[in-house]
Image 1 (cartoon, one colour):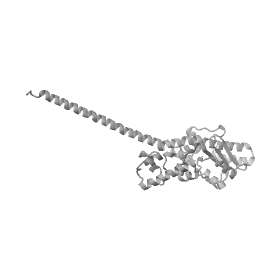
Image 2: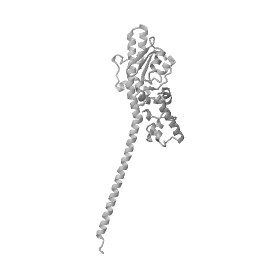
Image 3: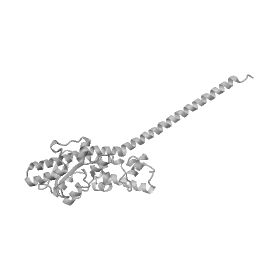
Image 4: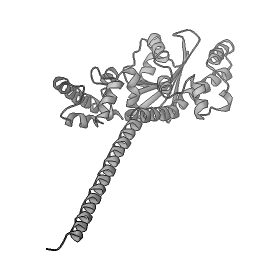
Length: 296
């Protein structure tokens, strides 16, 4: 997926990338091996060679800050296949005020970890937990979760980020996380199936007012469902977006190429048949002429 991508090159976005693919240049090695790439002058292509080689080195070194800076935010989903097993799925809850974090939930595909205000919601602990991962996956995190964390802790997360809200929108899945889960048949635990984001604020307020742990436990269960369900959503949405972006395009081009070849073969076969028929007619004509000719 990543090695088929060119959106990290200067002035290359999706439209230009599709033009590159349409020339049979499907990955980095194809680009480096091609003598010419339409739309790239000799100087620009040489500069692109340098950028691809640089990107390869930084990817090999897993320079996450470099990767997050050089791939547009809206295209960082292409890194998911590379870092899928080292990604963390993140979601926060707030008290209703921008910056008022009450819960941060993390899920690595196996285990969950929760930070709760008044207990362990500490900048050092959160930063240390996030350091273990090479990618952050959220739903609407580019607009909400990550800016809120940055404001709350003064903590900048400098690693690739996949915001599934935008990935889903590109494949026609719109609405909030719960709505999209229902569209895909992703289920929640029964006790929180009807809990919404506004209810999370209420649960925190009730816990703070009454100290009843049931309110907190329900809030934590709700947050846990948020982060755990992000993984199957990411697996599906990223794969589907890549299929629509690249795989279907390449497959369509190959089908078109095959159609052209088939037509050429058909035309060649038809032309060959026509020539054979013409030769046969000429032979018959010569034979008939020979029969009618008078003897000397």
